[in-house]
Amino acid sequence: MRIVLVGPPGAGKGTQAAYLAKNLSIPHISTGDLFRANISQETELGLEAKSYMDAGQLVPDEITIGMAKDRMEQEDAANGFLLDGFPRNVSQAVALDEMLQAASMELDAVLDLEVPEDEVVKRIAGRRICRNDSSHVFHVTYSPPVKDGVCDQCGGELYQRDDDSEDTVRRRLEVYHQQTEPIIDYYKAQGLVTTISAMGPVAEVTQRAMEALPSR
Ligand code: AP5
Ligand code: ZN
Image: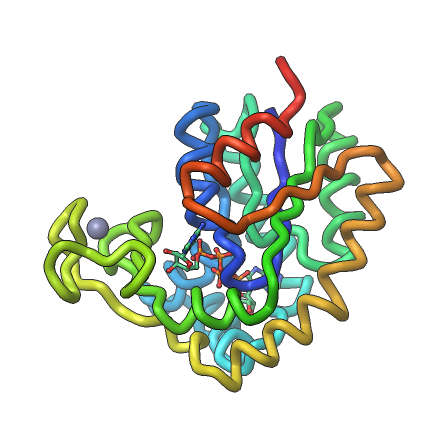
């Protein structure tokens, strides 16, 4: 199954992707996580991406599309994948369609996670992520770790992302409305979009998402 997850920053895309990818036995491909891995490894790509991310802007398509394509071409993605944070504008969506067409593949579903803006701000302000594994995500109020600052799953140190400051979050939301939301109409024209509420307990949102997927 090939799925695209769309939603504003802090909607819970990464949280849901971790469960959905496991349930469906497909890799979770997050361009944000790929950029952060490059930043922590101090690669050239990471250095280039960092200034855009810290400013809450999109990393240029020339960098992003090649990186996403390389990841999708890895062996574990041959039978499907869950894309989180890509595509993020219409030109990336067109590039993805071209990539898939060239490989005689198509998308099965686009899940659009809907959440009010004040909730997004609360979710991002309280988010803590594990340094060892970016799929270990906590929230100081909604899903606190047993021990402050320590990952329940692996004992790793929990940290707050550089782009999670209030000003940058506001900028990321503007960029989402201006550049990312138009891809929802792009995919609606292909009949692929299901909008689901991302409010309520994580497990309930996962259940809604699973029910929204086409049966295989
Ligand atoms: P990216 O890493 O993709 O960030 P984002 O889209 O802004 O989304 P977030 O990771 O902030 O949120 P999320 O929806 O995954 O929420 P989460 O599950 O963590 O991108 C970062 C930057 O990289 C971009 O700004 C851009 O610069 C660059 N970039 C990435 N992709 C790009 C692309 N394709 N093109 C160009 N640039 C690109 O949840 C948030 C919090 O809420 C957590 O604490 C979680 O525990 C909590 N939570 C989750 N679900 C619930 C729930 N149901 N109830 C209560 N709390 C919940
Ligand atoms: Zn961990």
